[in-house]
Length: 341
Image (cartoon, rainbow, N blue to C red; front, side, top):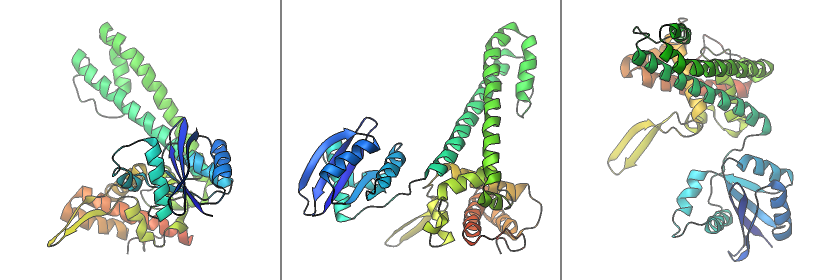
């Protein structure tokens, strides 16, 4: 006999639906959202499972790794693809969602998502934590910039890295401003210190990773871009061609074609937004700050003259993603004379 399983995961409990090969329901119930509880349930109820499906989510990686370690044929589906099917149901409940996921497993109409390993998850967690602190730092600085204008302690331009020091020095001018700004400046100093801690950890990881060191030889690519790219792609062999990395990261334009209408729009922005933003930053560095006449830069400058800086940044970012994947796959080094030729 053959069965197909759908798992609708929530933080506390998971709705389980097991279908026979002909679509008949064998079991429906709820189990704790831990790998151990799910393995026990499936070993008892679905020992003949052909496919076990669940959607991507916060705990999906942990559950998938645990179920695969137990030898179960688990598949993690893309949420957007599964949502299109599940939204067609009249009533949305966890039970109905689990039934819908089991049906997708039975008919084989699903799109599998990549699940990061433990090492890539750790790197991604450090990058996410640093990004969150950078956003907090920006919020604190912008709040202080508005305050110095309201209190009138700084009337000149407030942009630049030295603003925090200037805002701290200005506390002697106005006691009311000092009472407002001192706690915020102390928090800002702590956030900056923790950002440096994350930077040190990420630099150590980048130096110890052979592929990361090789990717960092690409002009404009630093340790953050290299690690974000590594933790997103993780296994270069899952792409048949290096050119497929651009669409995977959402760096290719949308295409709308219907009848006589055929137009290209903005980029799709699918895939990992952090890696995409780091690649765009690396492209900006290559276009604006590097003077060496590398062919990839010259190609991007021609696009910038024709279409503007933003489109040139996206185009060069896609080229960088393709180039980095090719270097990773081939084990080759970056060559200035050949890049982008």
